[in-house]
Length: 114
Length: 129
Image 1 (cartoon, helix red, strand yellow):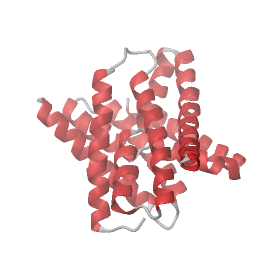
Image 2: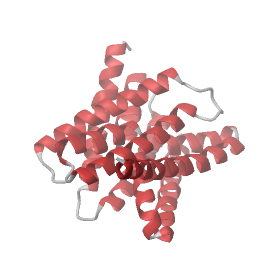
Image 3: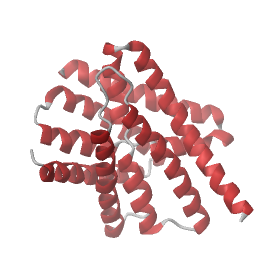
Image 4: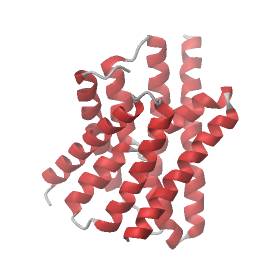
């Protein structure tokens, strides 16, 4: 794998992951549910990629690119910080739900497919 | 945020840029197996602080628009990653449970604190100006 292919794989995968996340947060179900779904599905996806994929360029495309960009810590952190002062209990529950579902999803695919 | 062709293009370009920046940090700070993933921690905390700044600046500027979508959902959304964090915690759990637990707890605390402090900092800077 040359640097050119590696850069292309990360860029194309990252573009695709970010667009899917945009579609998820733009739906009528709202931005909070959109981020929760993106983070859970992306964590399950990366667990599967780590368990199954051996090609470095496919790893960069699907793992670093698609799953990396589909999921987000920055939006989750800003959402939690914004909710915090108004609804501390809800903010904590939202953050915790992301952590539990994300880690659970990653563990599930890593264990089942690894 | 309305879904237009320009928004989709801006977010895809931003996602590519953010992902490449994240990958560069990963290449520069690879980290040894079984140790704390400093590179990913840095990316997630830095990205959370920067998003706090950008969101606060855009809010006061009135309306986000295409540049806002590029920077927030695109660059900073693509720069930070939740999936890598989740898989790292899961894999670290088998190598060193104490490090895994530390990483699992420290990342959310630092990311949320960084986002909150960055937002407050922008508000204060505006108030003082």
